[in-house]
Length: 244
Image 1 (tube, rainbow, N blue to C red):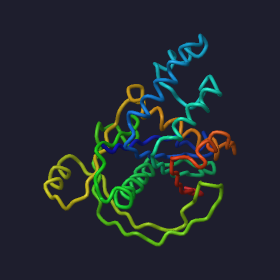
Image 2: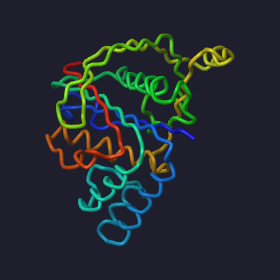
Image 3: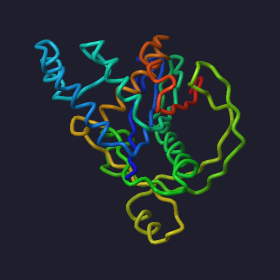
Image 4: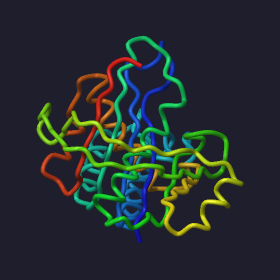
């Protein structure tokens, strides 16, 4: 089965972080990811200080303030050995607020993945961290138009590439009635994204570690975590947006 997960690093406020990173992870190796995160938790519980940190966060692993740098790198290295595709959108805020309307933009990467990597097969399940888009339990997106443009890449930092091409991917967020009407048509490309509490999903905790690694590179010009994915089984592609 194919799974996809959505997470973010940074914040929307102009006075908060310098960047906002939206991250999408697609993989069929769900159980491998769960095993790695659970092993990391067990190692944290073996140290009193780390165990207190984990309990304070409700048993959830997060990149921010992770108490054991060595274990964090070890966990990221193990994740780097899993076959998965990671897409990110990085917004340089330049002191401005970013509206919540930018978050659905990452859905275009999900449609792209379906068309280009999954031979137009729908993802079995798509999960976003709680309230990623809104307060709704589920969000339904309908693809209206998808056109592949010639891709041009420039190497900015080894395996991380900024896409300079423009894709034509038009989609809309459906309400419940519109979703019920459109799902009757087998020719319609629909994606349902569920909101879940990341404390209950190791996969969302894994994407938090990966998203945090990308965010750290842009926010603090610190590549020590992101470089762990060089020449790995993880394929990472990203877009940079200057200004809002």
